[in-house]
Length: 141
Length: 235
Ligand code: HEM
Ligand code: HEM
Ligand code: FES
Figure 1: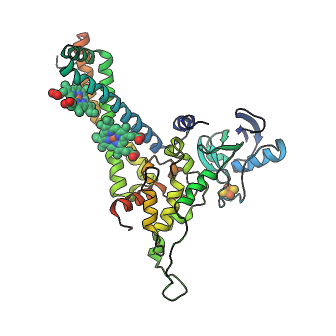
Figure 2: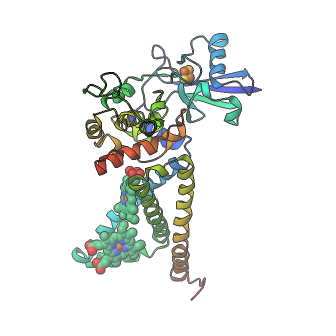
Figure 3: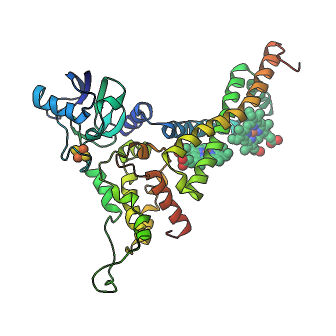
């Protein structure tokens, strides 16, 4: 088996527990943010090189599709950040916390914290998309 | 109870690609997966290849993927799998030699790189024994339990992506000597592991700790080695 095939078989097929899923989500969210940051550097650079295109880029960000992408991006940033702090704290300061019970529990807590941080932003962003793109007033119109 | 065994088959002399064979077997809930494999090999298909030696979780020969997760076939009861549909596959990330047998060569090569033996060139004070307090012995007790079955290393996403990663089992065995008060080569071992293919490949995915048939706290041991590298102290 090629290395790539082994890797993908393992990612998708191995029956890991919380840690396996946290690892995958951390990698996916990290790469997601890298992808966004690349696009983001290009779009901000337009201000300098192609000011007219910058306005197009802003208009693109206001479309529903990009709006949904931004809501996902916020989740990526929150999950990646909270989980990253958890891993760094365990690894650098408290190796003794790496027990099966603690790992399972703190992974779940990390997900819950990320969702709690993300929800208000997500609700507000959904409201804005509905309001600006469809004229639907959810609240605070 | 009747179980349906779906077994990974690959014969390098005949097959170009692996396939799966299905065997329906009458078994007891308290039978182990190894018992069922033995029965298939003995009574149904003598060409089925797998390793086993002690059959009691001591030698580390029969680590394999059972329903997608690494186990010792001799340590897992059918009833604990929670299903009668059982898929058995070879460990992931090592080359398959035949059926459930993988080439353990790369695994042991990594093991050898960490100097997994006591290094101490000084004569003991009394000329006979190197004494150690119960606390000093306790410090590395957990990592002495390793049986080198490779269940941990082949459950590790970093190892799947890059076989150059030294892997959890080698780090566990380095830990066993790094934290042994009688040993004098901690600095060398920490240097070996302070490498992009050493401890820093560990992404704390925890599959190793979940898979270890000896319940070694592997991720903790790896983190202790990471910390020793960072602080320069072996505590
Ligand atoms: C959807 C949410 C976001 C919006 C609407 C947004 C918008 C902007 C804008 C308008 C600027 C230009 C500011 C200025 O120079 O005056 C900027 C700069 C920047 N943003 Fe974002 N941003 C977002 C998310 C992010 C995220 C998630 C990251 C990090 C991963 C990020 C990283 C940066 C960086 C590094 C700059 C500085 C670029 C520079 O000054 O050349 N942004 N952003
Ligand atoms: C809130 C700030 C952040 C924290 C606390 C953080 C923390 C971490 C940590 C601890 C790791 C290593 C994970 C491990 O060894 O298991 C990591 C990996 C990574 N981070 Fe971040 N990070 C942050 C922001 C970012 C940003 C803004 C990006 C993208 C531009 C990013 C992209 C990545 C990527 C691609 C990986 C590699 C993932 C992998 O190997 O699976 N991170 N992060
Ligand atoms: S056969 Fe020896 S560990 Fe299973």
